[in-house]
Amino acid sequence: MKLVLCTLVFHILCITIFAYLYSHLSIHFEHDKTRRSIVDVGLVDYLTLSVTIQSGIGFSDLYPVSHLGKLILMIHQFIVISTHAFTLYIFTI
Image 1 (cartoon, helix red, strand yellow):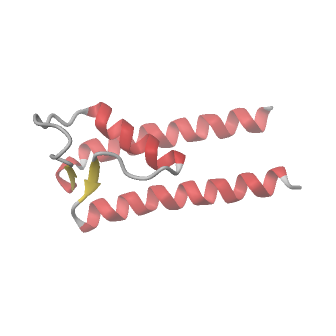
Image 2 (cartoon, one colour):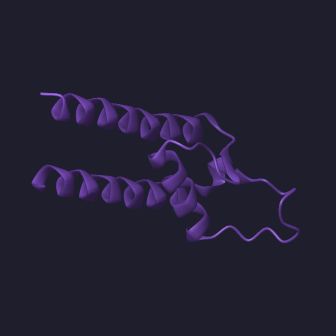
C-alpha cells in the first residue's frame, strides 16, 4: 500500500510541476483556436495538458510550437514511460 501511495504522490507532483512549467513557458505553446471562439488560456488549460500527458492520453487543446516546448513535453512523456516501466517491474517481482 505504501508503494501505491508513493506512486500516486509522485504522479500528482509531476502533474503539478509540469503544469507550472507549461504555464510559465506559455509562449512556447499554442491553443487550438478552432474549438473556442474566445481564446483564454489559463492555468486550468495547462493543468489539463499536464494531466493528459501524465495519463498517457495525449495532447489537449494546447500543443507545443517551439523546440523548447517540444523538448519539455518529451521530457514529461519520458518520465511517464519510465514510471510505467518501473511500476511494472516492481509489481512483477
